[in-house]
Image (tube, rainbow, N blue to C red; front, top):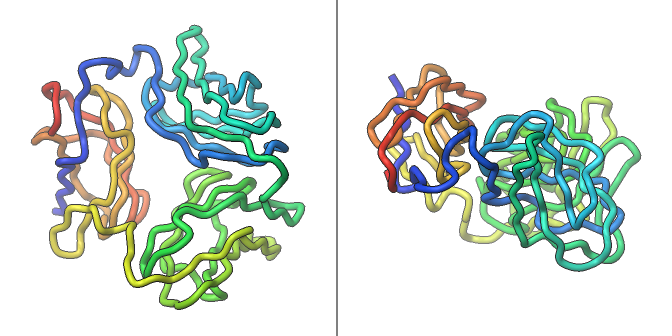
Amino acid sequence: MLLVAVCALFAMPRGHASADGPPFISSFTPTSSPTVGGTSITIYGNGFVTGAYVSIGGVLSPSVSVLNTAMLSAVIPAGVAGPVPVVVINPDGQNASASGFTYTAGSTATNNGSFWISGINPPSGSNGQLVTITGGSFDPNIAVYFGGIPASSVVWMTAGYLMAYAPLGSGSVTVMLVNPNGLPVTSPTNFTYTGTATGTATGTSTGSLSITSVSPTSVGAGSALTIYGNGFISGATVTIGGYVASNVSVVSTTLITATAPTGPVGAV
């Protein structure tokens, strides 16, 4: 039996931890967009409820998808250049606001009329680097290529957000996505191979099994969490602070979703 233990990455909070309390935002990606909008933003946190609204710079998103209580995606509306707040508003009026999003003048997204890429992060790394790709209208069966070489693994998260592991390569290469209809689109910036990977350096590992990150990093019992890493297999068990999580779903070898168990307040 494979046991995935979440430790040193996770905390049971004292504050807004309850799934039925007000929402809060822990992070979002991307952190910028051209003023024309139209691409997707993925927001992480807790307490998100179906029917929630997203406001960016005071303008409501035209489309919001609540994936679970800890993650939602939304289409970025058009805005004015400069820093603006990101706000999640639940149907009952409870809301959360976060700073750190910026509208940039002009358009940097590449678009083929079917789907588009707004950016990649990080823009450099070594073989095996985990790269986040943002944009819009990504198909779940989309293919990713680094310099014409297929990514070693692709994890589709939402229509505007996916992750891919860079294959063997060198130098500065284009990142190209191809939907099942065969239409390609290339990232506006290249990916540059370096000598050090950053996507797997902070994980905890047992053999070939590793955890690179957990989102969100603080929740209450019954809240959804997503675990990223490598070597996950069907039948894995997740524990948090020694307590077994429920509803464990091994989405892929690099992604697990689970429901947080009841546990004591504090870091675990």
